[in-house]
Length: 289
Image 1 (cartoon, rainbow, N blue to C red):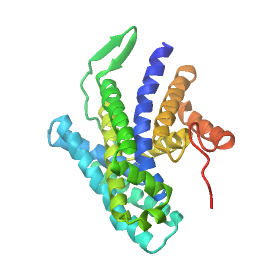
Image 2: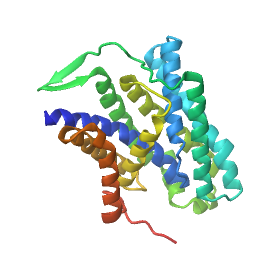
Image 3: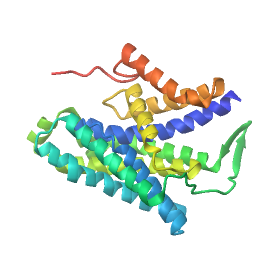
């Protein structure tokens, strides 16, 4: 029985890893605490619902449209809010408050148009796969295969490609990056597009299984931030470590105690890491100037 919970935790951890990479992409490159990730997650979920349920498009095509919509919203936030604030030399705290404002506006607009009730995309009885007593649903298989493959591809792209190296260089020193002749605005646009696509993919994989409501984004944001911090800030590969660790721990808490202890263990792990190892499990101590 415990192995069933561990596998479930690993699958959840893959989704947390995706979310953490999407959040970390913006944070590492801009140092903005991108709270609006929660709203982008919700926007992608409702775009997926709208095109798959209301318009009757195939699930795969609906998910692609949802990803495109999320990318447009993400880069729109950068162009209309974050970039003007940067030109005015606004502090990161101001950018974070603006991010909270954008999240509040978008979530409430969605609630106004779609209602507050929980909606379901796939209400059919799902087929299951059984292996040595471990049962996985079709949705979980999608999450494991598509989510896991996306994490692997992202980590390779961010480490090996020219754009991935540019993102890491911008994360290390934005002033030197601009001095060397690179276009910061272009790179930041790429970062927000990438972040929106990652968050939307995680959203589609999740809501296809458990449904959606306008206020689900904040819990998702908390898990993404904790996974990034637990794994270690500054590296994208550590998001996988943090996501899997958090997913398995939450699943084991459900097995040993009850599901209402999941949020408690999330913050207990965060507090212990901040006290005992602030750089995270696989992070490194960063210089402060």
